[in-house]
Image (tube, rainbow, N blue to C red; front, side):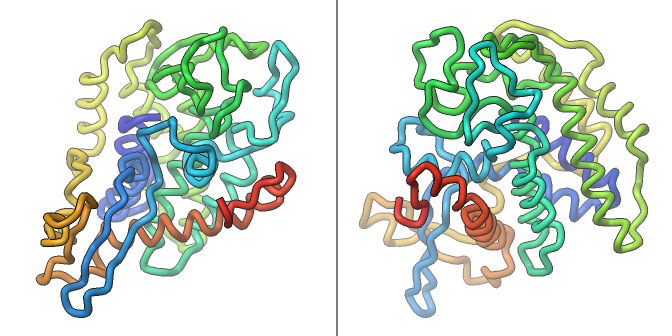
Length: 328
C-alpha cells in the first residue's frame, strides 16, 4: 500500500472508529512514516554530548544484505502468516514459512499489543502496527527477503518482496494478475476494503472498552471509502485517478493535513556541526523543545519497541530456518 491507504485512509478509519482528529492524525502519520523512515539519523544532545540513533523501518535499497532485510521487511511490511491460508494456493503447490497472509495471527498480535500499550509511544505504536497489519493484504503471498517464491512469470528483477509485481499490489482501485496463484486475478479494491474493515473493527473493539463511541458505523464508512476510491477498478501500468481520489479523501477528512515526511524531524532537530565534519547524517536536538516529547522521538522509540516485540514473536520461526535475528 502507499500513502493513499497508509496515511489518508488510515486517518479516516481511525477517526470513524472513535479516535479524536488529533489522535487519528498522529496514527495516520506514524503509519505512513513507517514507509518514509529509511534514513539512519544521529542526533547530538548539546547539554551532555550524548548521541541518539534511530532504527530504520524501511529501506529503498532492496539489494541490501539478507540480514538487513530480515530486520525490516518481515517486521514492518511482510509479516509472516499461515502458509496454508486458502488465499495462498499456488499453481505450483509451493508454500513458504515466511509467506505474508491477510489478517494473520502475528500481525494481529502486534496490533493488539500496540493498542494496549500505555506509554507515551502508544499512538505511534498503533500507527506502525496498523501499517504492518494493512500490508498483510497488499503484500499477501510475498515474503520479505530474497526468495524465488516471490518470482512472477520469470521476471528478471530481484526476487525480493513484491519487486517483481512492481507497484501493482499497492495501488488503490487497481486490478492486476498474479500468475503464481490458483486464483490469479487480483482486485485491490476488494482486498483494501477488507483490510479497512478489519482495521476499523480492531479499533472499535479497543475503544469500546474505554466507552468511546464511534463517529461512523462500518457500513457508513464503507460507503464513504468505496465512493472515494471511485467505485470502479482499472488495470495497466499507471496509477490512474490518484489525484481525484486524494481530493475525495480530503473532503472526508479536511482536518488531515498533507503529509510532509520532514515535518516531524524539523520540529525536533536542526543541523549539527558534526554533519559538516563527517559524511554521516548528524543533527542536534532543538533547544526550544523537550525532545523526548517530540513526535519524531516518540515515533523512533515506537519503532524500536515494535521491532523488539516482533523479533520476540518471530524467534521460533526464524530458529527453524537457522537464523538468529539478534546476531544478524
